[in-house]
Image 1 (cartoon, rainbow, N blue to C red):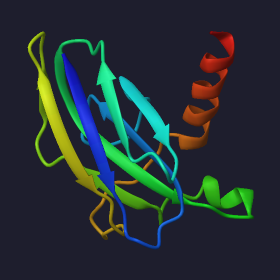
Image 2: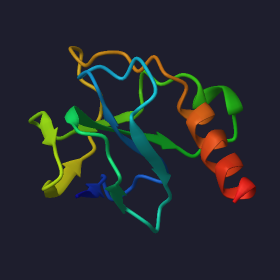
Image 3: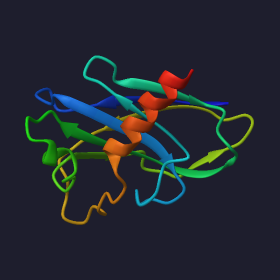
Length: 127
């Protein structure tokens, strides 16, 4: 089973992209699986996903010299796969997600994306 995600951003976007599978359509908790991508790598592959229904959500945070900007997520780019994804043992899915400027009706991003990034690097160091 796998989900392959390819993310597209506006041509002038420079920053980090976070993408994950969430149990709800609002990113208010840690994703079931997720990753951070840089400017050169705009695709990822999720495997070993627990069966269930998930929402694929993404956010793009522009590079900044002000560290506070990484915690104010109301202006970061947003993207999602339009349908909930049912994951089972035979799931093989390729999705394209376009990141765009936030819209007034977008839900807030209330999880700490920088914390997810730190956790990813700590896992890599431990291995």
